[in-house]
Amino acid sequence: MSHTVTGIAVGAVLALSWITLGFWAFLFVAVAMALGALVARIIDGKLDLRTLADAFRGKRSSS
Image 1 (cartoon, one colour):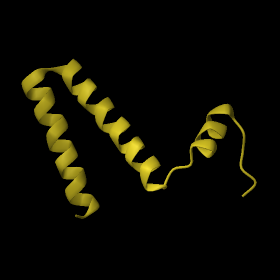
Image 2 (cartoon, helix red, strand yellow):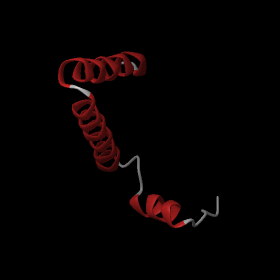
Image 3 (tube, rainbow, N blue to C red):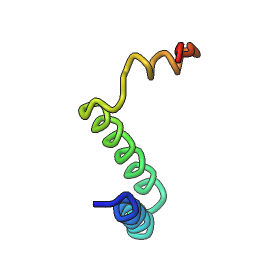
Image 4 (cartoon, rainbow, N blue to C red):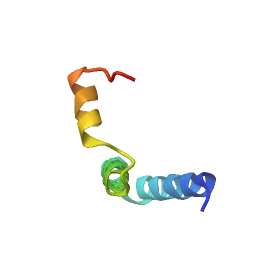
């Protein structure tokens, strides 16, 4: 599945949740989707938690 199709699907889910359930449900769905994407990237090995923690602490990488 291409990134465009995925983006369209995510946008449709968010729009429908806002229309049918209201703003707070939309916000909850958006946060849940973001957390799901974060967990998926960690599991796939595409996100290093140490690097992420260092970025939040203000440390810079040597590269």
